[in-house]
Image (tube, rainbow, N blue to C red):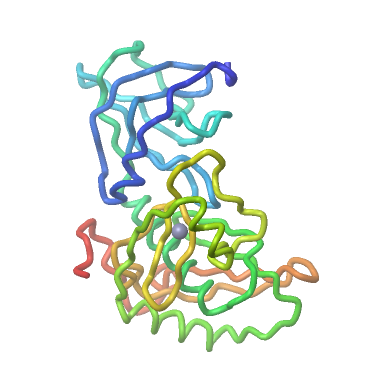
Length: 262
Ligand SMILES: [Zn+2]
């Protein structure tokens, strides 16, 4: 079924990360998941977890979504129903409202954007990353342990407090080829066949191709703590970052859905 030609899903999260729901038309109901013509659900990729949420049918019945992933062709998005629920009848052509678990997604946006800031403080190649709602980690090709946890945490929180706005730019593959230093992650080739590459810029701090979801200004991340710094292999140093509020920090971040003033 994965090799069935599926039409690409319009990624509303790519245009506006703050959109928490949209109307959509069902294009296919597959064993692997439900394909819609458009969606607000971010599909797991680039280390960022896929969204959870709900599909609401016109009769008011709902389907809980446990995961969002890309189909094998990487252009259609599969909405994966949570197990253990009786699914209402759903057919191609039905209209639905697709909504994300906004509180969870906002935490993902905050931690994802935080990894951009953290990467700017450690200017060596990145070998991987993972972003979950409660914790994130980024791996660096850094053979020598030169990182001081307290100092890193202090500089990271200073960057967050400066509340620099996050910009989204689009460039051509040719422009990217002319600026190879933009690609921080080893082995992260930009998608083939795309006419536009999405560039995330935090002016004066970081600029790189990225398809993830980000906050509008970095102050929205709120205070964070460096969890631990681990040596995973000779050339792989892993830095874990957590929200200060979860770590018992005194300052609770504002997790409201409103855009931070830029
Ligand atoms: Zn990003």
